[in-house]
Image 1: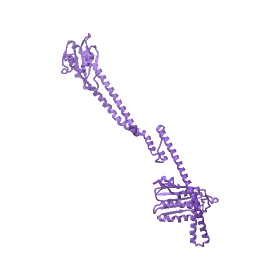
Image 2: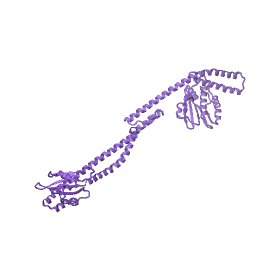
Image 3: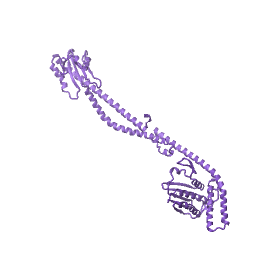
Image 4: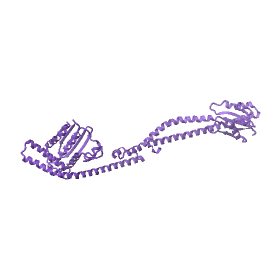
Amino acid sequence: MFANLSYRFKIPLALTAVILMTEIVLTAALLTRALADAKRDMQSSANSLAKTLSWTVREPLVKDDLWRAFEIVRAPVATKDLSSPLRDIVVLDTRQRVYASSSPKKFPFGMDRASLPREMVLALQGVSGNESEFQFDFPGYFSDEDATGAMRVISEDGSALGFVLLSYDAQRLYDRVALVLLEVAAISVPGLLILVPLGWIWGNRMAKPLSRLADVMAKVGREPPQALAANVEPKGSDEIGQLAGQFRDMLNQLAEKEALEHQVVVAERLAAVGRVSAGIAHEINNPLGGMLNAVDTLSRHGNVDAFTEKTLGLLRRGLAQIRATVGALLLEAKIDSPAMHGADWQDLKTLIAPQLAAKQVHLSWEVRVNESVPLPAHLVRQLGLNLLLNAAKAVEHEGKVGVEVSLDEARLSIRICNSGQHIPMDALGRLFEPYQPDAKTGSGRTFGLGLWVSYQIVTQLGGTISTSSAPGYTLFEVLLPVKTQTDARSPALSD
């Protein structure tokens, strides 16, 4: 289960475990040291007291002065402080019977060795037969027995006079160790309260780059590689930093690969559309030429009135525009086209008016070009009409459509904007493709053919077309270079 945990938890847990183990080891070492020091101090104190008593009780034993011996052994117990672990002092004669003790009721005069507590008997056995040797027996840890010291009492001539037995309360020693434990806890617990949160904070900080990389890796294939690469920020030159840098390079290469694949797909689509449209254009141009000839014949020999002549002029320009539009599908075809005049802009306004009136759209028409423009009228009219139809389709009821056309010495600027729903960001990059899959159903459908034709026209005229869109506002801007009078005749697209 630990193997499945995130490093956001593994690293803090590992640091916490190290901190706790360190605290446990230090506490155990301090307690062991405190217990060893307490035991050594007790043994040293017992040895010093046993030596002193063995010298002071020698004379009472020789003179058989029981009262004096009692006063000697009673004094250390009676004058000890409350923290002293000394419990009892017993003096035995040569027959190992009680001669004097600090607790006569507990150890009465003449008590046999067999009646003494087990720990005193064991200490007594340790010094029996060994002159001037001190014996100290410490009970096992957490035992309820007393610690016992024993020393032989030797006369000046070296003969044995008896034994001195000391008993110490081992619980006092454990109380001392417990006090040390409390002191250690008083230091360790606040330290743990500080170190453990710091361990989690530091662990999360160490694991954060790994978590970020894991999150980004999980999104590969579902989000654009360029957007994912922007979220990968290598920091430092350690292993994690190197991994992040290599992963970002991989995402950039993947983005370049997807862009190349997209270009290949678009090229294949354009090639397919070009093959189909070329055939269609050839089939349309033949009857279209006949219709134009018929309009010209009617205009010259039909004896028509002024209104009919105006209508025939509009029809002629419309058919010529259809011919130019069909020609736009033939990327290598060229025809001669008249220059753009003021009447062409008015034709565009007349053609778009019914679509805008149906939605009660307010049209802002600012065409500041009155003179002839050395650009093919058929192509520019088709370009403007496509963009106007696109705006009329996108604008909401009672919305606004704006047209602004201006001319300077170098270029013609066409700006067409509309209110209404904006174009999503993911669709802007593929707006001028002739074929796109439906985002909702996934099925293919023809979409934006007019925009694609507009893009082809702008490209052939050496211009640029750009789009910007925000909620409630969309703008198409076309910039076309204007040629000099000597180059006024511009190539157009046709059969």
